[in-house]
Structure formats: C-alpha cells, structure tokens
Length: 114
Image (tube, rainbow, N blue to C red; front, side, top):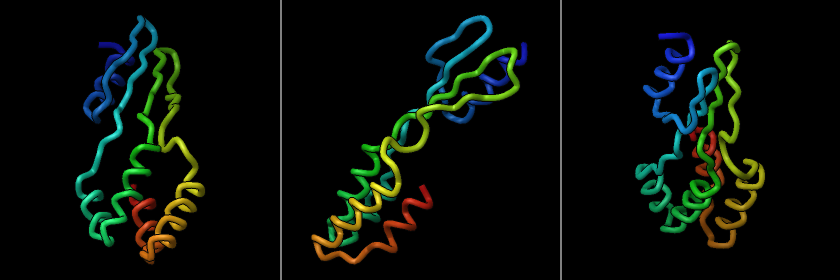
C-alpha cells in the first residue's frame, strides 16, 4: 500500500468517499449532514428557528479533498458554506427581528459550533 492509498484510507474512515481516482491522484468528497439535534433546537425557538437552520444547511457545500501522490500537502476546496457567515448572520438576525424572536445569541453560538 503506497502513501496515496494510506491517505485515502484515512479520509474514508472520516466519512469521505472517492469520486475520482488515477494512479497518482484522488478526489474525495464528504457530503454535508443534516443535524436533527440542531433542527429540533432551532424549532424550539418559537418554531421560527427551523427556518434559520434550514437556510444554513442549504447554504453548506460538500467538502472536497484533492490528494496527489507526490505532494505531502492536501488541497481542500468547496468546504464550509456557500455563502459568507456574515451574510448568513445578517439574514438570520433580520429574520429573527421580523418575527419577534430575539435569538441573536443562539444564532451566533450555533454558527460557531457548526
């Protein structure tokens, strides 16, 4: 088993799956996961918080890793969210303000944890 195979095996253990593979490189993807815990927690914020979580979930992207055999480094792309956290936070605050739910603190904590 060469170095590339070992690195692929390590990522597969962490939830990634191989989408492309050549002799000297590989591309792996880790799909985003829906958290029923956070969806329920946000729903308990007067029922409106679920919209905040759904917006956050829909804006997330799958994590993609590109590995090369001759390179010790890993190039990651398309990780995190599709929109900036600042814009997401602004939308969440506006939504919560319009609906009368003062949950800015909860929004900030949830974004920091995720």
